[in-house]
Image (tube, rainbow, N blue to C red; front, side, top):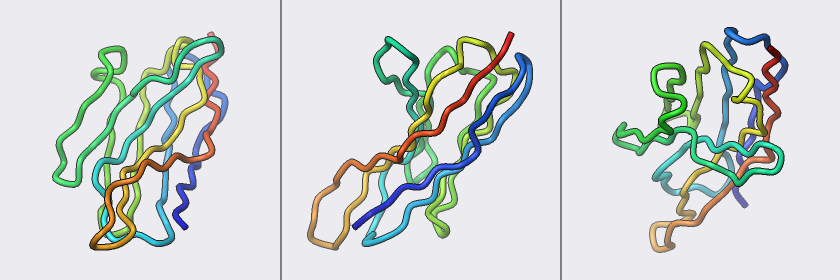
Length: 121
């Protein structure tokens, strides 16, 4: 059993900052990519930013220069520092990870329960 537990969402005014955190626990042998996705009402879930175990990142153009992802492999955590927030950043943010539970098993997708981020204008 693998769990991803998120924290750090909330309500903030435009221009403000929030930091999201996600911790992976359970039957984990190795973690490949960890990252954050978001889903706004009436829209599809989209990638925000993700990071490999080696530190390579991918991010949405809409968050370039404002959001920064960081990862602690030893603690199995990933964080998303969100600065200069805009009302259009309002969404439920989901932590995601590709995890193998044993040396011989493949990668499986795991998702957190989601945390609400609301940016007021």
